[in-house]
Length: 377
View (cartoon, helix red, strand yellow):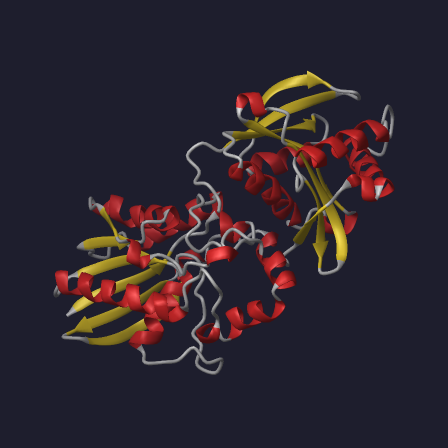
């Protein structure tokens, strides 16, 4: 009898930034690293003879957390990849729900009926992943295996194994990151010992942003509403400089934003929660282009959306933009006295490169490196 541990990958950027991942190959997050460590401890005293994974980074790194402690290689099989989402890949949840409300409802609640041009269906995933699973099992009779795959793919495999359907009343859940399902396999027959167990994560405190909603974005031409842009920047300035608008000149920043938009439509974006505008992202795609880094001029959220985790989603818009442009890093300025902002950027992976004089007080020049990241579709 073969023991099979079927494991969902750890938290990756797409999970954190509320993006549709599919075959998009982003990195894992700092929380994802904690989850891998917890998963590795879970398997410390469990014999494992072979470790397999999808060839996507988030699955391979999760598998390595088990394999490295066992002195085993990670055997990659692209047939274990996530559902190929085609034109939806790397798109933000909020945008998909807004732009494709009916299709997104089907995707969430009746995935067996979901079908869009250029993407796989749930049945396509079964047709490639289930034979791969059987081949792996046939290679390792009476052994213990760990296989790391993806949320939808694991659901498709279990739907096939359990002879269930994708109908809403039979639909299996998407298990949380690093959740473990244990199966026993003997001469073509499967027995489920447990499904979707993530008890190894009980000691990890989840941040507030895990449970918040998904924002959407729209390209914004500052010339369409100059007063809105200026008001956002003025509010951001007051937050950065403790309520003061000393030396603030709205026209300087507005005129720069107009140039950003004209040089790269989409560099300036409004953020929405449903139909309510809640923020603004302004990227200067020309600044730093000579050195292959991108510049963030403004990440702004209205007061009700600050300190609740939405800033991560605002930053994700800039990250996707600059990764699409092939930039090696992202830079920005943060007021040295704005400790909350500095901590926020440090948690996102920024480090302080230098201290520079600003219009009011000192500024930190901060950078997040993007080397080694995969391009976004």
